[in-house]
Amino acid sequence: MILYLIPVFILGFLLLVMVTMAILSRYKGGKYLRPVFQFLTKIPILKGLIQKASERAIARYNPELAGAMKKLQRAGADKDPMRAQQALSTLSADERKAWMDAAGQQGALDQQPVNRAQRRAMERMQKGRMPSPQQKRRAK
Image (cartoon, rainbow, N blue to C red; front, side, top):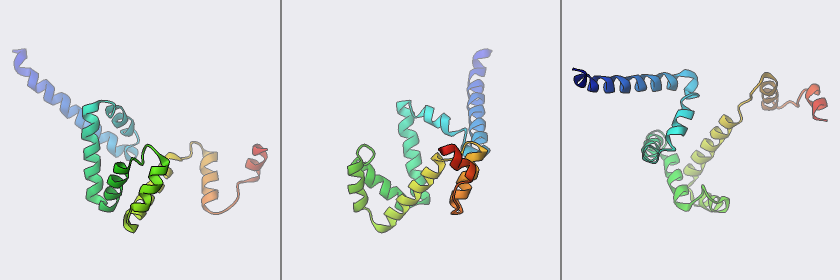
């Protein structure tokens, strides 16, 4: 009797995983889904599948960026900064612009302010104003 229910349990588990992934991807722009995928990329089989899916998604919405990524990967730019500079010089103008935009967005994601003081300092810098006097005193 229970043997007949094994496929139902498996399908139920897969449905639960899919619903969890969907909820995590919608909540705060996927902030909590990113660590899950970073963990999954440690599994060699899943790493290749996730990488291929990511490349196809990028190629679908930004073909110039996908071309630039392929050229930079072929040149080994991820391992050596000198090779990265050489590879950047081989990119077309559109590819270079797409690459720089993506790199700027990635840098913006990495430098998110943690607390209110950092957030306000970041806003002041973006507006072109100097840090507040309190921050100048703390720096000394």
